[in-house]
Length: 235
View (cartoon, helix red, strand yellow):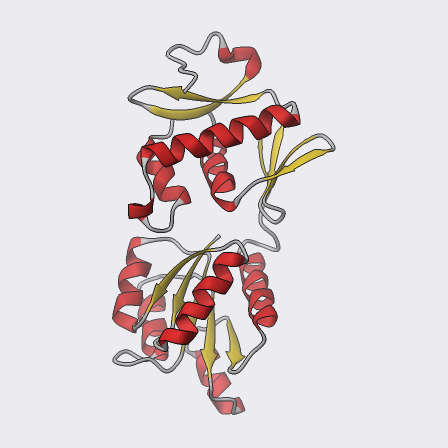
């Protein structure tokens, strides 16, 4: 899951970014409202953590801009203001939840997960292809009763391929799906993670295979049809 954190205090912003990444999220961090709006216009997020008191555009103004542009990403607003009237104004502005500073990091995580569950209709949906089941809450792959844990990046790569339903996905699209910062990604990085995913699927005994069609992209297929899939490349 990808989050956008908007916090002007450098120490708090860094702490939130590190903590959320450790918890398995992909995180973009913005220092002000203008930067946040650029991020939100360029990327899709599962949730936004928004400090209410920001320089320039306030948190309320950022939220109003997002909602006015049709952005319905769930927003958790952070503030040092704990009066009921302040919380009500934040919620009326379009926030989905409200957390008063200082707060326990465990509560922040719980609230973010609850927001994502509610926005996805009560729970993140499992993905299926052939005999393979991807569980986004466990960040794992299953075949029958067997399960293997994936890294968040492996999961995002495999989910992008499964969602494509056997249609080749270009390496550039996979980089965008699994790397929060595009300059951190490369074709070599995609290939390295694909190799790791293949090993894990083989350990599960899955019939699902990852195939590279040179110059086109990667795709998922099932073992029975692998030989008849033209252009398949073991890499």
